[in-house]
Image (cartoon, rainbow, N blue to C red; front, side, top):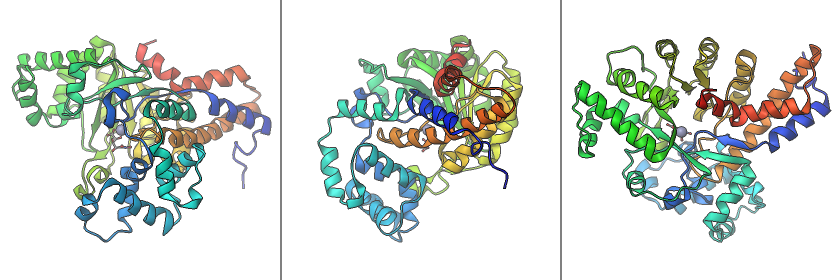
Length: 419
Ligand code: HDL
Ligand code: ZN
């Protein structure tokens, strides 16, 4: 059995890379976390960890109760059920379950007592502001990027009123309803004072651009973003393709901001699972190829949900310098695929990539999502350096530090700045 390049790495090299990867602060470029000013929208604590939609979907595989019976339970009762099914009746071997244990261990809590009440008492004593700092420190996260939607009825008024920002929390403008549900969104924009009609007249396009300008400025967006179904195509005679081409991408180019395209989500394949009900499908990466070619002056960020799209996504990034690939998104955020995808990316496009984002919905999750990913990224990077050593090229400690800073937000920041 041929030793993998990691196995042939000198222990000194492996230890050096592991230490640098473990201690380099990271910019988490896509999460569903919120600035503390959003109060209860920023989720944290044991019950939130246990009712994370990844665990709920898994727990339903052991539950024969009607979906609505579960949803009628309190959050604590839901968490008790998830704990019983996924941690007590069965070993918590999945990535999402192991993540909960990694968080508890990092916080110095012992889940082996399997005493949820005692664990809950500990979390009840935590103060939000201190706990935020503690989680960021334990995760080694220097900056969080939120997912901010003007279409969210809870979030929108807070932005309109304005609030003192916590500069650790930056913003990204999420525009799925604009691109994917224009028929319903046009009337909403009209209610908000933008003179749009359903048909994409010149006036409507300029008003959509004014809406994007207003919100880009209001939230200080670092990029715009949309998640796309597997059947998304470009060019195409669809509202999504036409609004992208006529309004969104010209706005991004003029604002100097990237457009993040997240390919391959099949929304609500099982609506009874609510937030856990989305699935995955194979996307047309050719649509991305066409966008990068048609708009060479616009910067694109992209990630894909299907494992089978990853190789074509990497090759597309090799063809277009205005494309920056990021993250092992959602269903690919599991160790076996993080390792496969990260190695593929380093082999095909080197270090001009952002290998991971957390996608955290619950603050404490950044602890496990980053601990687990750092271990894998270190292993893959060590393998690449070991292969270089065998080719007669030895990297210095400072070069390893530089490379890891690039992977952990440096390359992303330079790409966004256009430098
Ligand atoms: O659309 C997205 O940004 C996805 O990340 C969804 O929010 C999904 O529910 C999720 O949390 N994935 O990790
Ligand atoms: Zn997300």
